[in-house]
Image 1 (tube, helix red, strand yellow):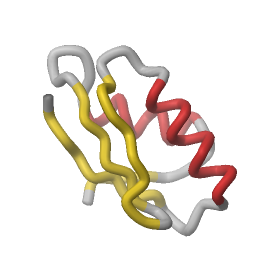
Image 2 (cartoon, one colour; image 1 turned 180 degrees about the horizontal axis):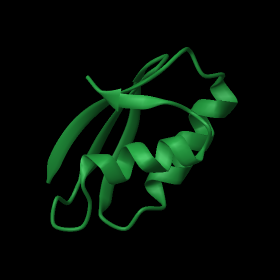
Image 3 (cartoon, one colour; image 1 turned 45 degrees about the horizontal axis):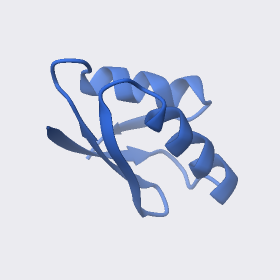
Image 4 (cartoon, helix red, strand yellow; image 1 turned 90 degrees about the vertical axis):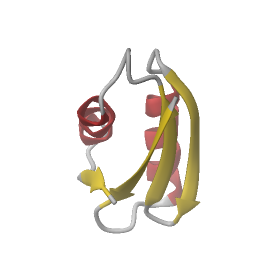
Length: 69
């Protein structure tokens, strides 16, 4: 498992963060997702199944800009 810390641009509302967390948890290959700050998410994922760009793309599909920290 790889881990990556992803920053969300701006400060999403608690509801927005919940949407992001749920979307990431639905991805096959994601083992763990947790908010580590108001605009940060730590994701443990299987690099055989997903890339960091897949994770960021999922966040963008929820309407938020994101990038690795």
